[in-house]
Length: 155
Image (cartoon, rainbow, N blue to C red; front, top):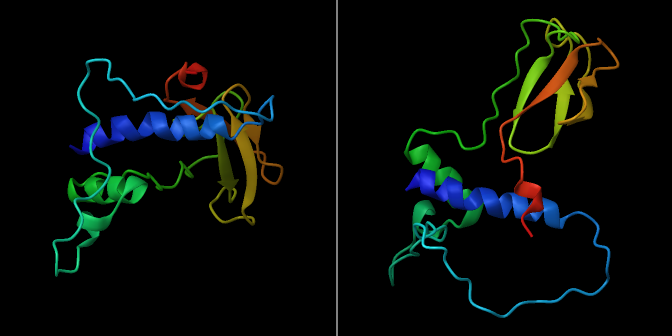
């Protein structure tokens, strides 16, 4: 159930990201047609069943969206939002950069230097097509893109 929820939430998240880009027109058409399934498995329920009448609902019963996805992942022992630190055992070089896993083509990275905590955290944007370098310690970072190549072009 959890893996199906992740598969269903990913296109929504990528769609939300692409919708943040500036629009070329001020007007937008809205569709009122019903969403038609392509014959695949039904989308997982990202809305909890809610509490029973006269009872206080649990977190799992009342959670929706990303919160429910995170709770379902915790129940199955899977960390949905991987917040583990990057490889800090070495300094990244142009030949061997520190790889930053990402499902998006852009990610914000914070560098604390080598050895760890040798300077204040410096934040910078890392893009799929361009490596990033910390201006304080010179460590090089590269995006390890694990997402769908054509996710941005699904209009």
